Image (cartoon, rainbow over the protein chains, first blue to last red):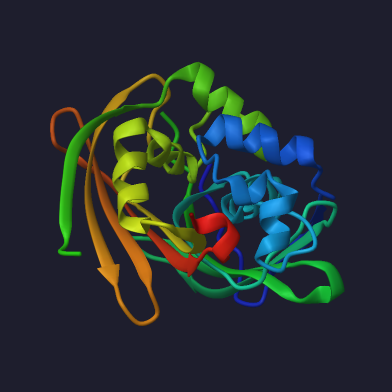
Length: 138
Length: 125
């Protein structure tokens, strides 16, 4: 079936992920190999001025993929790029949202999306963009 | 620190590791998640090079990009070549990676930006 691209301005439904527990952070550290103690050691986090260990930025960024797939299963990520602008701390949740900035049909159809991950007090913690293309089936 | 070229490293999308990663990020489905290649940076020889670049500073993940030419397949082997660059102001490590299939076909580019922060005195000894 031919994929119909979303239109400029279309939005991915907002999704709240978390709150992230110390167990979530430990599981991510184990699965990803990112054992940076800052994410696992409250004392170390406190020594750099954080009230709790920060959630791995990559755990936050990775959460966009299931959110995007839940919205448009017929599309897949061709590019995913992010800046981690504010820490999300253990015990906090993040609200994911996304909006289509560009939709290009034709020979190489794709959309460009602005993705935002807002932490506590609605402050942007992840500012990202994704290029999505029609899913290729094997 | 001069720019350092690393690899190519043999990297894999082992089913068990992909599944563990998907559980940790809350993903379903049969595919390799787009951000899965970040796991390869935890391989001992790659991690050692990154830690060497950090010195006694704490790395904070500031930015990340995955730019795909072709999606990865579960249970396959790939090659990862890395360029490690240190930036002075502000202090950062920039890792640029290229992933190819075992036969040299381009799959994706990775860029990781780590901000380097001085550790408090009591932790840096």
